[in-house]
Structure formats: structure tokens, C-alpha cells
Length: 320
Image (tube, rainbow, N blue to C red; front, side):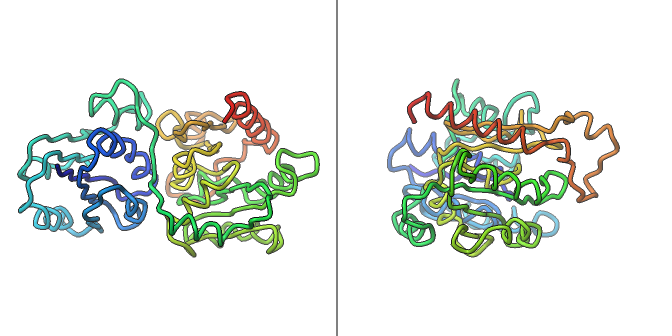
């Protein structure tokens, strides 16, 4: 049995889409999987069980990436074709069952929408499969002295949804204080390679012995393995936030100019906290996607600390 799984260029959307892939992998043990996605997202699929192939689809002029995909898979028979990018490709390939996502439904979370698309009453949580080699690398990267690990995502692919660096510094100080949630915790700072400069004030606020910094320095599955070893993740709305939630650790997403109703972290112990200004008020104030100025200023450190405390208490109450 073979599955062609066509998913997003963007990391966050690709992580969310693993909730669909997980359904097929778990429903049909042994199903052979081919994944087609953007180059940025491709690494998170390398641990998928019974993976046959990953086809990277960098965008090309006049839809050339779709033509290239068609040529590379048209001579195979596909028992299931899932296209989460709403193209016509699924309909011009030889196969038995086709599932195509047609547009976004902003009334519900993306994971719930995809679950309904494949006929599930209850969505599965996203999952990123990690092998032993990447877990071993995570053990090398993180300290093994028994300290708790506080994972922080201080950056994002757009400045508007990025909480100020000085507030992350304040947050980390308070959480790591003697009377804080995670006294003297080791800090894992993660982000994309081109986001390191924006996160530099947060990096420099910690000594080398207090931090592990990964901004493109490691494979994404090693990052995932590091997140699995963390005790909590707090960060902006980003692909790494979704990876943390998929790792099953307590994950707190920080939101302002993006919709948590559609893109909040989705996992067994996940929550979000929003700016005091609503999504609608932020955009009514004259905000624009062209500007990279932060639109997160009305989110206080106190509010994030309170939300993080509540999240960890809920974990304890659930016996996780």
C-alpha cells in the first residue's frame, strides 16, 4: 500500500499536517510513504515510518514545481493521494483514493479542519518522528547534569509577531530565579538561521554554560529531539512552536497579530497567551504586513509568567 502525501512549503503548516499523516501511518501499518513538500519543511519527515522518498518542491515560475512533481510520481500507482495544497495534481495521477484540501476554514483550527477532511471526528495531535541517532545527538547537545531545560523561541519569520527580545530576557530571568518555576534551568534557544541576529540580545543575556543555542546549527530532527527533552517551551507563533507541541511537552505560544483559533499550538499540553489588544484591534490600528515592527507590545511579562505557571500546574494535575 502506497501513500503520496503533498504538504506545505512552510514549516509550521507542515508540522500541523503530520496529524493527517499520522492517521494513515497508524491506521495502515507498513504503508509506504512518499512526501512532497517545500525544502524548509522536508527534514521533519525524514523519520516517518516506511518512508520511501521525500520530494522537495522549491517554487518555480509558472507552476514548474507542480510539473516536476507530476513527472516524478506519475509512473507509480498510489492507493491514497493526499494533497493539502489544493492543487489539481491528485486528479491527474494514477490512484485509488484522493483527498484534497480546498481552501482554509477560518472558523476552526487547521488541525481540526484537516481531520474533518479525512473523516475523523477527533483530530490526532501532530507528530514528528525522531530516530535514535538524533536522540543521541540531543543528548550530546544538552547537559546531562539533571537541570531542567527551558526551551525558548525568541524569533519568528515576521517581526510583527515577535515579542521584544528584552521581554524574553526578563521572562527567562524570572523563570530561572531561585523562587521561579524552573530555578537555574538550562536554556535552549532555537530559531531559524536568519533569525539569530534578532535573538542575539537574548543569547548574550546568558552565559555559555547556561544556554544551548541552535539557529540552523543542527538538523531539524535533532532540534525536535532536544525539544522532547525540554520541560517547557515558550515562544512566538512559529514552526518551532508547533514542533514543540508535537513533541508532547508543555508548550506556550505567544500571539498577537495572528489567529490562535487557527494556528495555536496543538499538543497534549499546549496553551496560548494573547496580547491585551485583540487580533481585530491590532489590524484596525493600521498595522500592515509590510512592516516588521513588533505588534506584541501589549503582552506583558507578568501575563506570560502567569500563563506558564498555569500550564505547568495543569501538567502536574494531569499526572504527566
